[in-house]
Length: 373
Image (cartoon, rainbow, N blue to C red):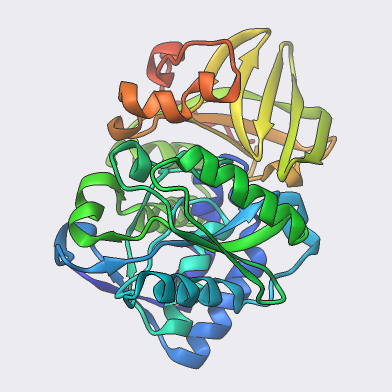
């Protein structure tokens, strides 16, 4: 059933969506402030359960694209995603009846809420990644037959570009990425227009609720002085994500990070308190975790870096030398593990010479013992 999202949900959503963003998806702080202001002005946002939407409901997802490092300094006006939405409506000759996230990562959990509040639309509780990915074609939407074109890219001066590559979502990504770079490294977008029937078929359900639930599990465990890692494992066990595995605990001893080609790329080294080294490789999001050179988690399963005491998620642009962290692996839903899905956003799509092996097979020990200090 539908429900109302207000300011009281935003802190938990920001925390949980940042965790699900696997280091990417953008820092939610600015987005959270923009959404809070929009809710104050326009009232709570109606969230629709994807299983209950009308089949003919017309949905236009909205998001930010670009390098997360850019968004730390290049603050959006907050009006760009609505401009993108309205421009796409004009191109399609049809008004949106709802918006939806394309991913459940940090900032991109907030952009559709901002659009919903300012445009007076409901938001569908679903998305097309179930985490965050760096490229726009990496969507369950496209995997299962709903393509992104036509799409609109909007800049902070309200300049807009309409891109239509038919069913070639990879070409669409390349052209949109070039536009985002020209707009300063980041832009706001509207794409993957679809019906309610499409949502039921191609989207990952209830990921806004999942983000709020994960963020709440961390917060409530801390407030009750319980282990937040055990709380997360217990929470995810009752969802389509199911498995949480501890990968490593230690101190960040090296971060190599560069912004290039519209992405934040790099690697992070975590040195164990006793022994061992974990290497993380990322392109906006963490893609591969190697413990002493051996893979322990690989995309599309989630690799999440959190503070080792509070379990507060840390983004790739927020990684710093000296941080004490725990690295967790979380299994993705089955819809993201099919051969069709892995062909689009599995290891080979990122040039990783490793087969996809589910986290529950790579790491067999569940989170049973407290990991917090």
